[in-house]
Image (tube, rainbow, N blue to C red):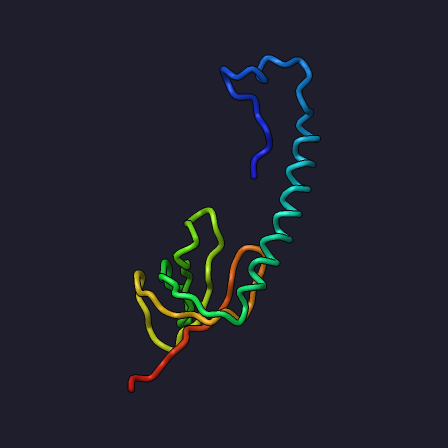
Length: 115
């Protein structure tokens, strides 16, 4: 979320009455607080569900960072998860979501033994 700023060549750039920076920042903060609540509620609805996750980063102690097919890098949240196995960037695994915060999900890889 960005505060309004004058855009060169637009009609509003020429307006005499511009909103003060402090007001813009306060409005941005209020909108972000509302957005965090919405995002947290949406993420909470994903707990208890499973998602296919592509691994984007190997962390420590068999922990990984990945994204579902619905998540865009640097825009949407990430999925942090644990696996009992060593995995590599690019692997796609099934993750059961067991916790949610404002923008990210946490879970554990679902393992099904071979039949």
